[in-house]
Length: 316
Length: 136
Image 1: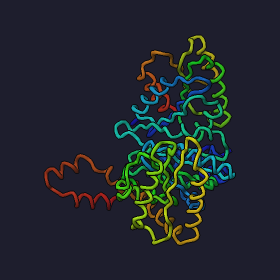
Image 2 (image 1 turned 90 degrees about the vertical axis):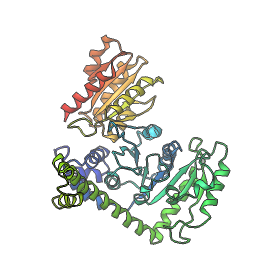
Image 3 (image 1 turned 45 degrees about the vertical axis):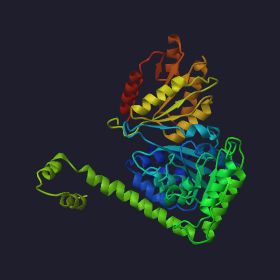
Image 4 (image 1 turned 60 degrees about the vertical axis):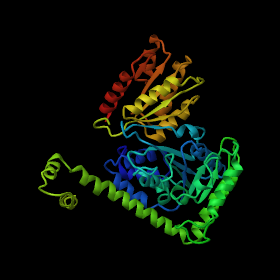
């Protein structure tokens, strides 16, 4: 019997749909353990086949509960679903409370669903540096749909747009007026907007405000008339609006594949993955070699930050 | 952060018919502040659900909280499900209203540490740090 972390064996088992192997592979990839690059190299080959849906929006908007409803919908169509849920790490202790899973426990024992919680581990932007590696494991596992839930975001977290194919922006009737919706940042990157908690008062106004803001013109990053981001109302709690939402998600995936946009987005995703790799390896390793001697040299003005920086990067 | 163990992951679970999860939440919070990545299942989980979550999340330990008195049935059932999923190396510990005389039976079933009411949080943190550092 092969050793339990033997990469060749793990790769084979993940491709066969083995959840235990996928979990182990995820741990290796996310922790940058030995063999992580061997696995990543193999799993990368399957990338780009499944639709990756990014679920973003402010904390408490209902992203996890809505994700749970989407899982249910995809399972009713017999699709295999992979889910990655990111929550923040503490900058003080390094620990994290990954609380999203609690909202999707009804799918815990379904063999067609694989859910993994991830801690942001110091990355700003609502995701984690290991996100691409984790996505590739789920792609190799044969997932048809991959749902990626970001950390609850503020106005400025747009990294999900460089990771997912379709960005679902979740908000609530209490989001504020159309002036809020006109601001740059997170509102620019949504492909589909959903006003969740439609059971609360103010749903119609929130939908109208969003539509009004979006109707002022296309986002700078978007090709003209290529895709009009729809605005929907839903209540994840009461299971309302889920079918309509899923239909729009399918529609966007079709649009991506029929137009050149899908290829352009995949290219951007790979570029971002490369950027993350460089950040993790080159920049981090150079920073780790900054020691007190170097700082003392700077303090005595014998050298300067640029000269030291160049030296550190060269010897990386 | 704990030396040698980059980010240990713990699943805190509440099996069976018991909705009292303040204790579990206190543990979740203390472990988060001690540098662990903690996942919480919420209340009323079956052994199968807990084992599946532990497997998918790739945790190093599973902590069970139960106040209903059904620990002699549920804790061993969870240990069995974990083994069925191939999670033989996962540390299982528990707490709640558990009489001392039940502890040997739980140990035998695979529950390593049992912590009763009044246990200082630091005791549980130290226990996990020690056990998980040794396990790697």
